[in-house]
Length: 604
Figure 1 (cartoon, one colour):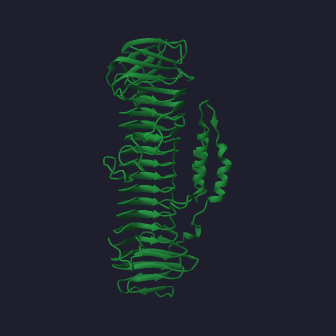
Figure 2 (spheres, one colour):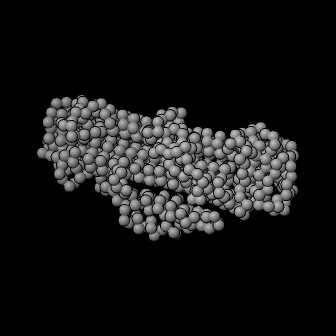
Figure 3 (tube, helix red, strand yellow):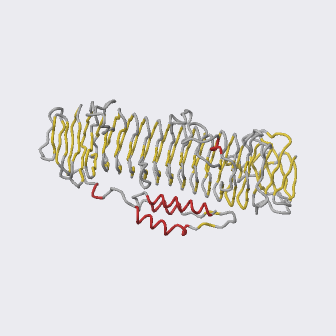
């Protein structure tokens, strides 16, 4: 448990060390500060982290945003009216050379009009901001980027209310020499860039990226539509999106931050917004952290879950190389690769997730924590996978062609296009005492072709419910752990094959049952247990054929006699086959047993 404490401390330090959004993190902090249970039902209190978090916030909460950036569209401005071969402007801070308009002084510029083969360049040595008020602009270029921030302290683009603004570039750029490779995006900035406003921005990127800043990029709001042969929106140092509507069709990554030379940069923070992203690569990709406070996301990566990608291609829905931390709100993800992925750690604090994946639903190389949320993984190779998995709450439904919950070490190498590569399924790791599943609350329902719960180490369960359907093959088990399973609370009902069937360990404080059948029960055949008074203890309707059931509940009490039935019916409403209400109409009585030891094993 000491290692788990260190992990949560580090993930918080990493989160707050790289963001410039102190006020925005208040909700993340309050939701994320949960208590964790160790093997002896002790707790890790959130107070353990308070001092380190405050220190990290004070020392590292910076970015280029200033409230004075967000001027009104009626602010007094220098007018630039674009017209083919006849652009008009009357200011010494602007030069016009054919259809190239160069802004050389800081200030406010309102631009309108059309250029079919032109460019706006910002090149100023001033240590002040340049504002561009786009007031109905349509600029295309046949040789280079139509909007190029070559040098500026900071550039702020305002899309004037009710206007539509378009930029498009060619499929090939013409550079002055072989040493030059910039600009390389339709809207390209070498320096900090901010975009906002209630107008719309349409970018058609035919050469490379659509919108790129080589420093930081902030999108406050707006209605932005992008079609790009490579990345959609890229902020090298960071990409911060506060609100807005984004429709992105990208041949590379959708949203990206990729500074790999500074551990405090290369992050994405999304405060809110509506996102419709289709990307051949990753839909959202950060070299360090992806941090999502809110928003509605409709994501397709790599062509979706029905497509295959090579091992050299990363086609994940959401990827943060160091951490992914999500608060909410709504996520629909269809991914050829992992739907949510980190080479480090993942924390899910809430939200609604509808996931279909060609590989893992949610994968973290190091540790994965779910505190809350509605998570529905309708298709996956492995549903949820990490070296350490902690579930404190939420409702989780997993359909997996291999394992439902998989606790194993190493990088993800299973299914379609595991990145950065690894061994066989689950990364090819063996048993290890540092591999842990902590189940402290919530509901987990699993339909698996491989193991339902596969832990190459230890399980500690103190609360919540785990319901498992499958497997049917004797080479797998509904429950498969290598070292220990301490069942100290909660409920487990796992139906599957008997070849590798396991029950929780004898070092548990709660009693368990493992019953194996000599003949196979058909899918849909209810498995029912009642106590000596006839009260319901378990009514469970497996979705697959089964000849083994592992069960544990606080209702199993020492010295009491219980009766097992198969078949029959229930008037209740099942939650993935588990009935918490209704009355049971008896089927066939198969056996009775009296609880006398921690684990009762029966073969009938």
